[in-house]
Length: 589
Image (cartoon, rainbow, N blue to C red; front, side, top):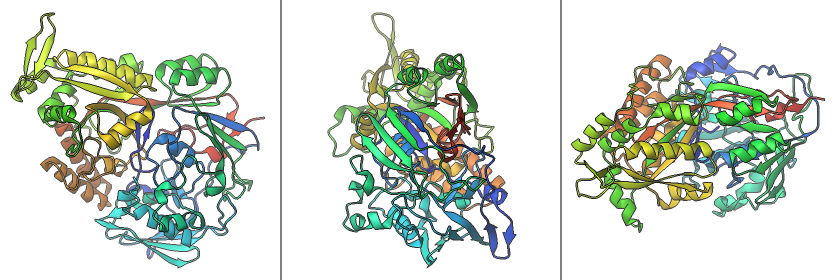
């Protein structure tokens, strides 16, 4: 899903994915004289389900919007993407592309033109016909710089937006300015919007106000398996079966099987588990290790998917604060801007302790931006230095810091201006693992003489500080890629990316290394040879690890549970782990 970076789980960023041409070839039906011609996907090996019933799913926080173009957090997207459809979809379990709203597609030999054939008789959930005009309108909105969609930069190839052209009512052509290594996965999670509902507001410049959390169900329509029935602020979102959904199972039965999905807002992981045990909720996604073991004793369906595509990291605020009244944050930025300081913090953190104490060994220590779960793209030669306070102190001394001892015998770190080093570390109060990690990091950095104050914040307040006001020193976050491909996180690592978290809104690279990363990311985007892409992206990983714009910590395992009797429950490591196949979930009779 998106292939951008999105927020969830007590600041879990979710990155939109795109993927290499090798995956396109594997998932295709062969090569024609004019390029690759990919036909309708094979039916999934799902069990034929039975109709009826509701699935109750917990969310840690309310959605911030119901608008798929603007959504930047997983809580919003978990709801939205049960109601929306895309042209070509990545199967989260197989990680291969498959047909969705596009019945088939053809790719030119030079890899620059994609011709998509829409399914006939598509209808939005309000019964209005969907055709090529809706596709054209949707891409116009996503590509509009004024709308500022988190997905926009993935639709800009070679510095030029994708050109979209209507051939007829059911055929659309997409022209790219250059070959695109990620292939047709670029279309995944680009929602096809109802032009008849959204175009008037969009033309009036009011798109950002549309489909907010106060929107009435009648105002929203999509091409997904469910549609909005009810949104009660502070309580629940109810989705009901879309009677016009296009998809069928292998026997020709219309999908989805479930009548309703109900999202209930439960602010903490422990409360979720208690509600699961009492029978109030049916599904648990992203379980912590302790609760995973607990539910195993109660007979739930459990899945440990191994290393996920998620990783946690510590991010220092290096944003441009000119024009903002944040003098104390601005003063501390002098420390954060120094590579030696960031590297020293990294060396002082005991990652193995985080794995052992926070995740009960159901996680992997991490020193780079590619998790062990992404085997094809992980740089095996990337250094994984052991914790070393001595080396951390050497780096700090080389940068002009000095360590003294207080009257009680504890170390105190001073900068070159003789100011004690102290800063706040913000994280989400609703995520117990993140809060515990922050406390352990606080203790680790105390050994260097750094005074760190942990500040747990409500999720929305945290988002506001990170993305709007910049009123924070450091944050503890997680990022989860939507696909196992380098381009999944491009909006994080490209200097002008919408989720370039440590320095948002850069008009140009702020450093030489960022400039080099930009060049390499562009290079891998147009490279169709997987081995060459791997070589290029290895270099990207090495540069990021060396300069430590963020401090990578751990990659937790994907842990999920469901009530006995939930059919076709097949969690995946790609986001969303448990609801990716919501249209075929069913209750066994």
